[in-house]
Image (cartoon, rainbow, N blue to C red; front, top):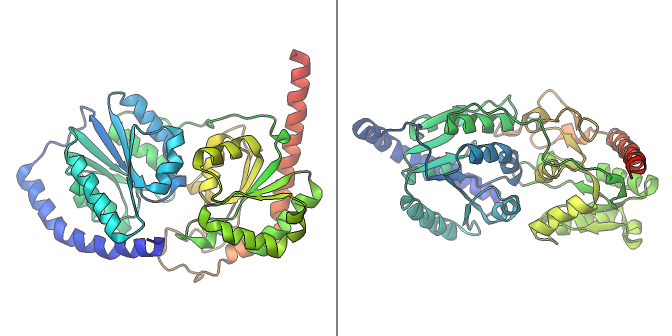
Length: 400
């Protein structure tokens, strides 16, 4: 199923199920009075995350901390096939249950299968990582887990009565901080967010490709830069640097990227300076390509940004309808390697805040960002990486 259809299903079916289940749940809660204390950790902790590999990567550090705090707990993830493939290489979970979302009937059948499986797990808790979904709240309820954790905010007010433990979601805070808050509640311990990157890399200058990503899910395509802006950036890179370009994306982006290249960069394609890896690699090979071949990444607010940050790759991200403060934190000492450009117009941020965007989809917050502003950022990053290469070479000559 396509994402717009999934959202409609989540909205309308979700509200119907909630309307039927809410009074029953409230009545059972009053009469049964189950013990929902958190003194003893569970044997199984099921995480639900059906959309957004990038946000799951943002949650990866809090989840890793939880694993250390709960060494006897088996961590399970319920997600779709694409996210399962993308998160598996990071070894966050002991087990991954994949829901096939290719059609409604298959989605329902696989979902029911895992509900039945969850009933067989002893001492089960559930952590719903979706922020706005209605059906994931219903799914969590159907597991009949003793403790069910979920984010509570105005658009999903009903969760207050369906979850056993509600964690206030602060939209003005960084997403990672909200995940850390959930981790604190589940583990019943103080957890300090890490300020370190997962990987520290050097000698980026020796890598052959600048990685470009102007793709995102259909959840919010207004995050994309105009093709004309991207073409101007590509032309500058290919005429002013020695690097080649690699375009990132999924298999569904491959044709659109090829069309962009044919329309705007045909001469460079003939010279072999462009590579379209959208959908060409499995996730492990995709991560290795980014880690081993990329000098840096230029990207919009999308999953590849969080992959780059997880791998320690220098990155410049461009923002308009979303606020970078809500999604990324730049660790001390990494300001030159992790940069962003944010066109904070009066109506930004709007994505995830309004169902009908104020601009009606005419994302002038991205259209008004001049290619020269992005090129200036990119040039500064490349100059820094070249100097960093010189420092490393000098240090190696002294110590070698």
